Image 1 (tube, rainbow, N blue to C red):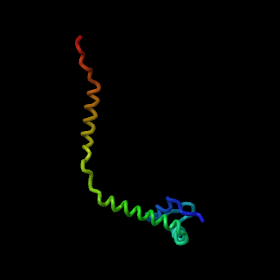
Image 2: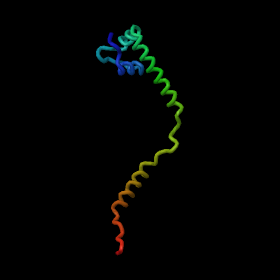
Image 3: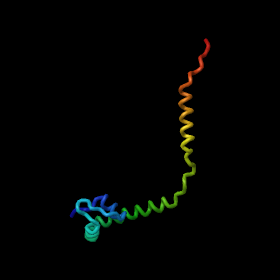
Image 4: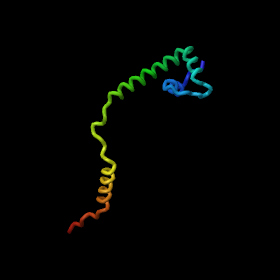
Length: 92
């Protein structure tokens, strides 16, 4: 028996239609009804997706927000200016 690949399982889990290699949604559902290995893999993927959603749902915003883009550009310009300066000559 041919098993479903990861792409087919993920597309099915996401509710997307998948017509890869002649496997439509109804063919995938028929296969899942008959194949315990693919059904178990689908359930593993579903649990993983649900856990990831739960974890990401509790995540707050970043503690430190990135600087505005203008500030980044100004900092880069200052660094360039420093590199272009001629170092002072020392006396002997």
